[in-house]
Length: 176
Image (tube, rainbow, N blue to C red):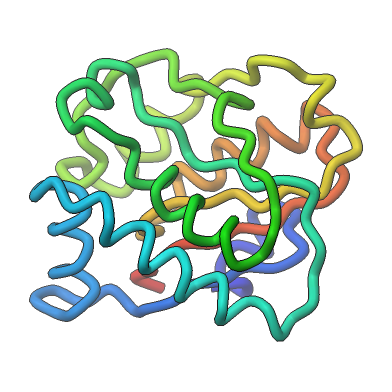
């Protein structure tokens, strides 16, 4: 995944716990997490991902989960990326900056969009809430799954434009 993202955004490291395949284990677990109300799945998988990262000995100042739009958050009851981040934080001992960025516009689920539409729609969907809390920080950006990289690319550029010193990304699963 690092090689895939490296030419697009400036990242220090990239982590993915599983490979996403149709009808595979990652798809089953992500469906439980996102659509069947199993927030605990995110926490447990986040701990596993955190344990897999420990050997790299990279230090992060904070973990920033990809935010959900408020209406989707209300519908689901939780942010799956935040649940993953909580598990990672427990293992890595790194604080979570849950409100560092917000999703300001609501669009169709990424899963229902084409690759091109994912990149088009992500360009202005997110905003930094408080630049001073991110400046000169080593940030670990966390999402549940990276398929096209549109969400991660958009948020990464936003964070780097707002003074983040070093950026790494992590996800439970990737299609790349």
